[in-house]
Length: 380
Image (cartoon, rainbow, N blue to C red; front, side):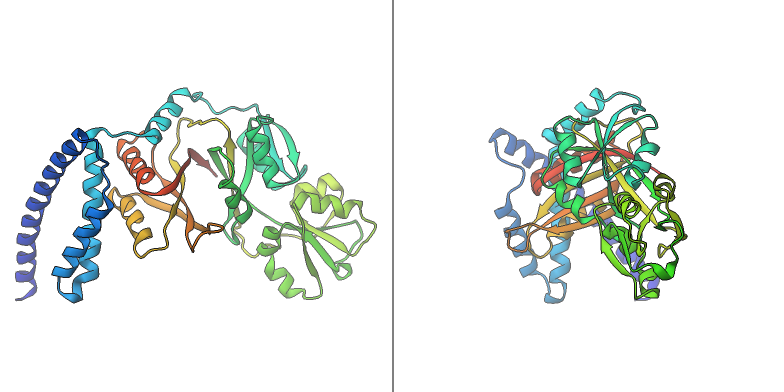
């Protein structure tokens, strides 16, 4: 057959596949009603495994993997439709709708906000962008920020979560597994790192540079060009600048913001020493309340998947089925498990879209340790 004939044949097959697909979905509706009458769960792992085994065994060997993928997606669509037919809503959908109804219609300008570090920290700059008239309480660690929000000592917490150059802030992601919270907004902040030292200090005088590991990593080219200077990890960029200010040692310097130079009376020895001119850090604003403010267009979730072939693919197929754009996938090992991983997903979606709510409900049922982290608007 030539190309035209091939396409004509495919068109005929597509039409027949569509007819059979519609018929299969109609029968799935009857299956759902029967399951409801008998109080049976929609998901039947043994039945799905049996179907996949039969179909792959009946297919030519060269197509086995394709057949398995095809029927896996087909059954996922069937389960999704069955939930829609039964209006089978669980806590996730109800929780989101309840949060939308109970959230104030305007994001607050005044609030008590928890940040890690001290005055001049990048988290403080992000908090200023998010609120404008906030009272900031500073804590020593990221975990202390989570605790302050949990214990309602602060209305909100602002934490860095990822950098465009150096990647994920691993400590924050790991703490997400430990604390209950809701992401209510996020802020992208362009980060311009300065090399700061006591007045009169020259670059040639500097032997050690203090800063947060993320900032040090974002300035790795500077250290490669100055191999005699030692990078020393510190808990926070602003605390590093404050330490340099209080030290009598002129061989010390810090990587921090221009605000820190003004706050602590330090000289800018080198300007913009980050590797990239478009160095951005994304900060999340967390609350102990399940707020979803108007304008929310991004969703974050967390779930665990078994270390088995196709586990991640089957999950991603649910996003692809309704045309969602994933903006972030992050995996972290689950301590004490046999290679299982905790996954974090960020994606662009509206919490008002019924298709999204149904998909989240499906994920909450099919995946272990599912957590809805929040729906929010991201500012830049």
